[in-house]
Length: 578
Image (cartoon, rainbow, N blue to C red):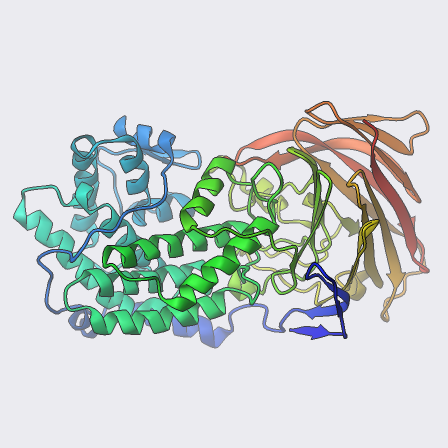
């Protein structure tokens, strides 16, 4: 919920003034919801559900849409070499067991969602790719065409599968084997009927949107689907409303999920185009808002900032998605509902997380990143978050992946070496930040953000307040972090705190003689100076998850101190020297 304290609307559209953001009280699925979901999946095994999947089977598709997106060439080449690969995990195609439960979840989703068809079509002709696609398709059909499985028949995977099968029909339906072709089309129809009753059971956000995209696609491309199309559009409109914030962000607060959603709607638009129809209005309107929101969390290097388990992604792939969307818009500078604030001046860009973490039921792997920021100068990232908890390679140790979700893995303040919001092993977030108060002011001379959160009140008795000011020329970023006493908690002694500034790849930090400053040499040769007052400065090792999910060794600036019962205050500044 967002409470507005009367703001002033600046000429550039930025709302100035104070705002109070509260996270909803429901932190996760209730016991009743978990039991309901479990029961729903159990019904998939009943004769009643099997009867629901029966009906007329199509002899062909009405049309074949284009896939407007480009696949991963390296993954496509691996397929041609006889191997299916995703995020550092690879398995031979020959004898691939789709029933395997030893795969990581990202790899299993990639294989069962048939997203690899795009990679294959990117590097292969139909003559080269069809035998590989049909071999894998035949193996999947043998295992799951008639068996409703909790993983393989998950609603979001069926939605993605329908989009992939129809867009790449030339690869999977080139065979002259009529029995095989009939099995593909019959299974497509069965999956569509499964989605008719299960799309709303997918998790909010991209999963549910994917499921309803599958329903609409089936309605447009399977003969006799007009009633399903209308039904699917109504469901998709609901999924977009519950899966996106009013300003176009994802309810998961994950840029990766938002990018995924943009891809889904872009593919769906091509399905409409194949039928010579326009994408229905709610989806088209949502697409415009989503692209603006995504641009708002991107750096000048055209890759994303790292939030809520997302890594930066690959700049060329992100650019291809934005180009394919057909949306031309400016970055959203103030995502009030999605929770990210963007300041831009000169060649500098500052992106701040000014909201509580997402509600647990909306996302797995949420991060305790409130009031963290990323800062870049042109293509060089100066301050980053470690990021990538859900985008890292499969080989990354689980303990390290979980560590990427902590407050310490983000460029913000930690109290007592604890998280501002609790991180649970099951992937959910617990107690912590409930309220974030935000104030923003704009002028030609500088842009200023002041925000505070209550994540440390319950345990430590402090509110964390952060003030950030970016000068109008983008050459200086000034900050102040304060711990203000609040609540009933009172400690007799002092409490340790640390403010971390994780540095971008290639940024070399050197401490000055007085120990209160550091010189930062950027990859392009620019020099920035960091100086602080109110704490001890140290340079330590860190890491960053890059666009391909790989951990890269970096450095971090750490300002430490002790906060007495009355609180503490640290001021700091980043200033460009050359």
